[in-house]
Image 1: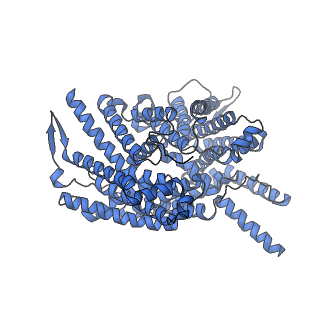
Image 2: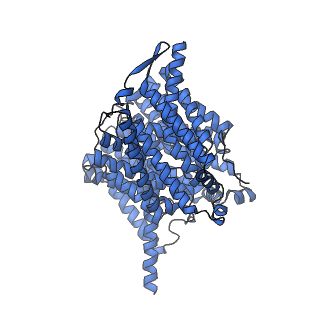
Image 3: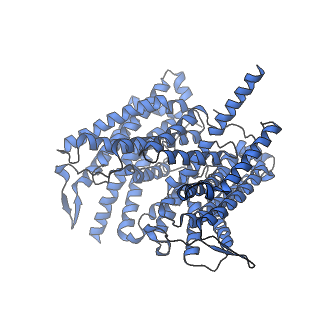
Amino acid sequence: MTNQIIFVLFNGLASGMAFFLVAAGLTWVFGILKILNLAHGAFFMIGAYLAYTIGGASPASIWSFIGVALISALVIGLMGLVTDKLVLGRLRNVDYHYVLIATFGLMLFCEGVAKAIWGSDYFSVMPPPEVDTAVKIGASYISLYTILVIAIGLVTFVVLELVMNRLWAGKIMRAVANDPWMAGTIGINVPLVLMLSVVASFALAGFAGGILVPNQTLSVHVGSAFILYAFLAVVIGGLGSIRGTFIACILLGLVESANATFLPQYGGIAVYVVLAIFLVSRPQGLFPPQGVS
Amino acid sequence: MTAASWVPPGAQTSFTGQYVMTAIGAVLVVLLFFAPELVNPGLLFIIGMTLIQSVFALSWNLLFGSTGLASFGHAGFYAIGAYFTGAALRYGFQLPFVMTLLIGGALGALAAYIIGVVALKRLTGIFLAVLTVALTEAMGKIIGFTPALGEQDGLGNIPRPIINLGFAMIDLTNSNDFYRFLLVACLLVTAGLWWVVHSRLGRTFRAIREDADRARFIGIDVARYRVISFMISGGTAALAGALSAPWTRIVTLDQVNWLASTQPMLNSLLGGFTNFWGPVVGSVVFTSINYWTRSYPGLSEMLVGGVLVVIILVAPTGVLGILGKIRARLKKGDRG
């Protein structure tokens, strides 16, 4: 029993962190631009493909692995810049239905491009050699790559929290999120802040793609499992709250992992039960956005 | 880019225009009726799917275009109808086929009623979107665990029905015959939806979409009418699914996820959600793009996705909206 619990905890934390790596960029853009970017998963997928193309199927070391993820973050960030100039930037202050549809169209477009470039074959990527083993904790074996994902998720969370709450940049972003008009009148370059937020969010998607590609079947649909949980986490967490999303991701990861271990014949159901409970009982989320009202 | 106010179809065109449109529609229906003699079986299958997709998209657009609610889990309703009919035909339930279809539709409406009563009062916008997505995914998982519904493999080998009218038997096992039945059924459902949209009920829905607060002030029970529109929409989607099961002869889990739910949205927006016929036009355009680009992997997604983004940026009222704009400009040119 203890072994099972340790197993559930580690697996749950690892999936939770994986969800968070994907959800972080999503919730960031949601908090500041108030748009739910349906194409986020598609850029995650392109990030994963880029990491495969640059780093190959078996990364040489843990540092080159992380380096490759950072390169895909950079490239996807640049794509974010282009996307913002061409599409998202033109959709500010537009009814959210239109933005959802536009980002959905963007998602399809990206999937088409990925299919055209990389084809419909499946690829796979190995974890870097240093973490391609397992350690024994108690009586259960935990893969070191799992622990690496947990560590990277934690670091990402801490960095984002520090940026948002302790740095000038974060305070400016929060000001813009809260009241763009007022922020503009006190001399903040609002369009620039919005554009940089989009770039940062895309870069996070690219980074997540590079980090999470090992142990996945790399196809055009590699993002769909993560992105669905990321959407759920963003909603449970309170739209736009990084802290809330982080907690919601861990919660979803643990629920999913407990479900898979203790009720494998009904795998994947518990998450939706949790979501339904949250939506009906606490529709504003764990950490609802605080604004001046 | 404000939401374009709803214009009843035909209101802008003159009487002659309306007659021309009706004539074109009649010719189309006749052509569709004789399609089994005109095209090969492969293409006939695609035409049948387009009919079903059109009804599915129309059902979604009743919710979005009329009442202003967006469901991101419409595939759930479609699957309810498809799985019910599939199971009924495969396991030989002692039910007349038309009854099976109607029960399938009613089950969809019932599901919509439950969701509507529990959630629709509290949730709109993004929350409703995520809830409908999640419910559809959960339903897909449950079907995946149910042996009677084929688990991960889906329900295959669904037989086509024979309708017993008492005095005569209509044998639909032949695909040409079932196609004609499908065409008539889709036309009837479309006529029903047309009537709903143009009736007092439809005007109430539009009043709610335009301004829920004002609608409330003039005495419309907004929550109740939202649930009603949700029920009609869910029921029609389930009916489309019910019609699809004997046509494709297989029902799979591919039809029960959030990507499947985006199909009716895509078709509605491609064609133009402000016009009643937009979803139909969108379904035809989408199927055609898929058909002509089938040998180039990725091209159809690029085209459809690109067209969708361009439509939102340039003309959020879809293909029919663009045509309308062009027509208006041409008319102006005539006068000036």
